[in-house]
Image 1 (tube, one colour):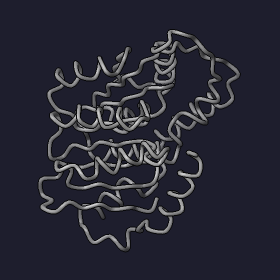
Image 2: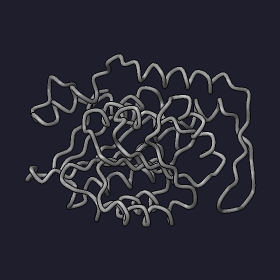
Image 3: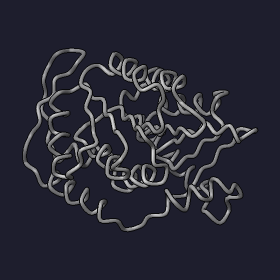
Image 4: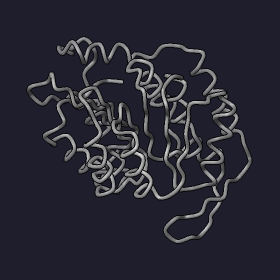
Length: 257
C-alpha cells in the first residue's frame, strides 16, 4: 500500500539525510544555505494569508475529468490541505525562484494556484507558465493569484500531453520546472524526456511526491540514473535534478530539511 511505502521511505530519509555541516560540495552547500534554510519573508506571509482563506472556505469547486468527461465536486479547503504543496515545501519553490532568478518557469499541474504563487512571488521578473487540465481549477488559480497581486503567471488549459510539447517548442529552453501532475511512472518519465531537449547547464527540474508510490519512486530512480543528469538532491517530498556540466562525476545528495 502507498501509505506503507511513504512511511518506509520517510524513515529511510531521516536516517540518511545530511545537514549542512556534512556537505563537502561548495555548490550544494550554497544551495542549502540559499534554498533550504527557512527565512521569514513578507511575500510568504501573503501566501500564508491566502492559504488560510482557502482553508476556511466552505465552497466547492466542480471539476471535469478529461478522461471520462464526468464532473465531480471537491472542497476548496480539502484542495488546500491535501492536494496543494505543503507550506514547508512551497517555501523551497519560492527560494529556488529567488536564488536562481530564472527567466522562465514551467509548472505542470496548477491546482488552485498555490505552488505557482510561490514561484511567481519568488521572482516577479520571471515568466511563470502553469499547465492544468481542469478549466475550473485554472479559474480558481487566477483568483488566488489576484489575491496575491501577481501578474507574471500565464495559464495553459487542456491536456498537458498536448500543451506541453507546443509550449516547450515555443520557449526553446527551460530554466526551472516544477512537475506535479500525473503521478504514474510512465507519465513522470515522459515529462522528464519532454524537458530534456530544452534544458541547459543551469536548468533545474523539481519533481514532487517522489515517494508518493512505488511507481513514482521507480520513476525517480530512473531519472537519477539518466546520463544527462549530473546532480540530484532529495528532500523527501521533492527530487531536484540539475544538469551541471561542471560535474564530471554524477552526484546525489539527500539533504535534511
